[in-house]
Length: 291
Image (cartoon, rainbow, N blue to C red; front, side, top):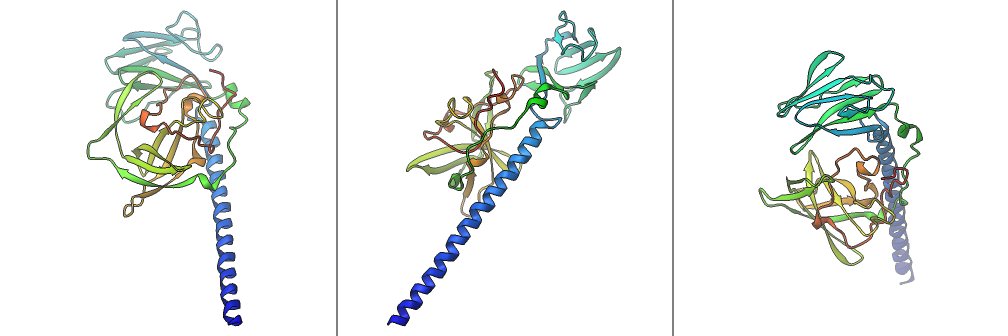
C-alpha cells in the first residue's frame, strides 16, 4: 500500500511540476509576443505613414482653395516649409485638382483606389474623404513630435488579460453605427459580438471585420483616468470556426490616433462597447500631446 501511495504521489508531483513549467513557459512566451507587438507599434507610429508627423487637416470648400505659408491662404501650411503662395486646390464635385508652381494634376478622384501622395521638401499630403467632407491631410517628415517622442506608458503585461470569449456571429446584413470625432455616423457591417466574463460579470464587445482580423473600439472604467478618455482600439484574430471561441488580448489595447494629434478623425466606441469594468492592460494615455 505504501509503494502504491508513493507511486501515486510521485506521479502527482510529476504532473504538477510539468503543469507549472508549462504555465510559466506560456506566460513568458506571451510576454515576449506582447513586447514584439509593442515594438512594431512604436515603429509604425514613427514611420512616414504614422500618426506622429501629422501637421494639419484642412477641410476644403467647393471651388478654389489657395494654399501656402501666407496667412491669407485658405489652407495655411507650416512656415518656411513651402512658398507663401504655393498654389491652390480645386474641388469640383468629388474630384480634387491641384495647381502647385503652375503644375496641374488630379490628386483625388472618386474612382481612385488609393490616395495620391504629394510632396514638397519635408511635407507630404494626401486628400482624405469623410462622408461628404473632403480635406487635405498634411504630414511633416521632420516634425518635432518625432524628435520628442519617448514612447507610451503601458500597464504591466498580464497573462490574465488574455481572455477566451464566446463569439456570437452577426445576422446577415446586420449593421453597427459608428460615430467619429466629427460627429459623422456610418452604419458598418457587424461581424459579431464577443461575450466573456470579468470579475464575475458578463461583458460584451461588438466587432467589425478587417481582412483576417476583427476590430474593436471599446470604452472601460479606466478612460479619463489611466487611459485615453475616448476609449481604445483592439484587434483580435478570427474565432475558431468550429467552437466560435476567440481570444481577446487586452494587453494589446492601444490609443487611437486622436491621442497623438488633433489632425485625425477617430471612431468613438459604440454604446454597446462600454465595459462596466476597468481593463488594466494595454496602453495608458499618451500625456505628451495636449488637446
